[in-house]
Image 1 (tube, rainbow, N blue to C red):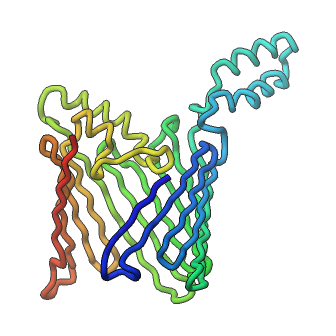
Image 2 (image 1 turned 45 degrees about the vertical axis):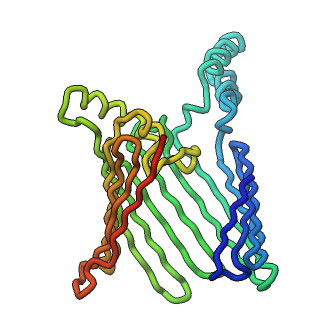
Image 3 (image 1 turned 90 degrees about the vertical axis):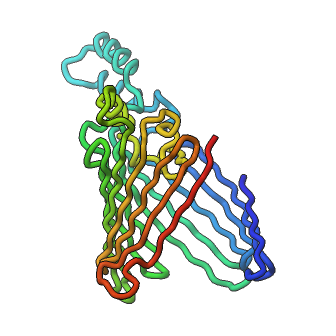
Length: 282
């Protein structure tokens, strides 16, 4: 349960209160929301197809049945194979996961509502190839369609692209982005070993949203505590030539982010904005 409130004289009624109830069952999750702004009610849900990640034995039955019914196996040998396979079959052998979700919301005061649906396909750490994630979302009322593809191109490099399209206005947008991580002491002794350790943990980077990973100032909490990360460079560009740059790093207990928005088309306002954020993490 999470309750947050904002007080601002510029907002209607001087502010708003948001209440959120979240429920996570592994195979599926749900969130229920209420906001005093327009008396908005909302519910969203996500379902993960395949074995239940909380039940290591969920994959045993089907594999065990294959062992018994396989041609050339007697009942005695089949039962031995059943025991052997069932002993080692776990949900960790799943190499990918397909998820589907939807959300519905309705404003009691303005008598308007909306909905959206989405699907996601993501590889898991057991996948032998490069990890990637694909998503597709659709808002039928607004006519908006959005798809994205993210891939870990290297141990320290992630690439992503997004395409948005509106079936009513025919407006579209293409955005490409990247993340480049920098390790501490890459040129020092022991840097190669840290790179290998980071690469092993990096296979789960693209599944943070699916596995509930937490981020501290944009940096993975486990890596933040381990001290391997010196910083991360993020960049994005769209079809209009608008570029965004962001550097995230830390100095001892201070986590900082600095970035800028640049318009490659030139003009007076080539640099449209510059920002700096500093956080303290103890």
